[in-house]
Length: 498
Image 1 (cartoon, rainbow, N blue to C red):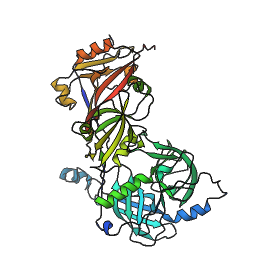
Image 2 (cartoon, one colour):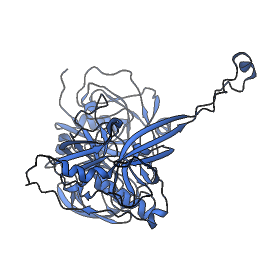
Image 3 (cartoon, rainbow, N blue to C red):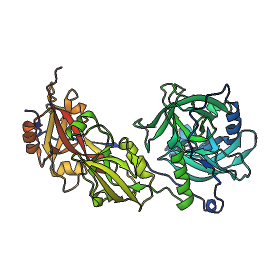
Image 4 (cartoon, rainbow, N blue to C red):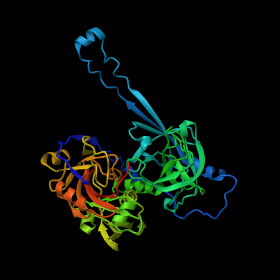
């Protein structure tokens, strides 16, 4: 038997799912004093030979990069025994020093993008700060800051200082970047003072790095260290292409993998703050997933291009437009989609209530579908799962090592399942199984096997036994943050030797 039916009692372990909550702040006077941003959309001249010095570019850019000082006042918690007269008689007043407030200071960088004082930086540089001040590179004077907007989802913040005739950087079109382009990072690493480092664009559209929010990073080997966050990543013409935001490093120092938010993404955040006072994002209503070789074989796809629609949310724009489970979205408004994270970014950057044209593949046929996008709803933050570690089989063969059970009222309540959801709940997955390698989880609901519906555990066992071919296509329902949805898994159907 390839799949076992479980009658064991189920225990639920609730855990916290990390989601992005966009925090917004806005001042109305920004509309009356708009930024004067200079944007150049032309690509750099890649035929030009590099000179012997980047000094002219640095002299052009450095005055636009500022230091940002943030201060957070932390009030200590009141001692729970402070009001106990017996405790105070023997040990004194434990709350006597409770009025002391501790200051937590942070240091980051920012980039002047408009002569009248608008500054781009990383959201995490200023998030939670009670006081923010900015100092300009050639001026030791500090300026108080007004926060125009903060967006945790893209890690971008827009600040404003009351100052005119500032040296503003020119913004480039980050979509014109190519891997191998030379870039300079400018910021204040470790608080040592303004520092310039040089490298190349190591990768574009980098995602899947464990960060929350929208991931579409520029990766560079230009040295980026703590304190560089919010600083400038510029091309060889001195134009801003990204806002430095993170590094990948076990030690916390530069290991040659720095990440920057593309300036096009930052510019969209800026425009939406100024236009409506908050970030609004397009909403399609699908559960996208990346393709792998197994899924491509299961759906008879020519390659791994695009994003697979694992599920369509009820009453969503996608559902109303006729998007179906198993569709592969290849392009949105002519822009090629490289994967699930890229689809999320592209849709999020479109305005709600606008029409988007999607190019898809459905059962080998290419189609074009028009979708009127909605507005992305506010996310929640909790998910639930099952944990059952008993009776794990020693070997794994296709779905050997997987146990399932019927969905009863207790399971439906514990897992917060929709009342109309039918299927078989996964109660155990052997870590040495092909199903585990395919990313099947305890708590997943198997709703389809080999394109046949599964209503209960008997169906799951029967369809699994009848499955033929080198791979078995599973359709599962899984909790995704604040909502649940379906996705596909392709499981190796060959015997595994240990």
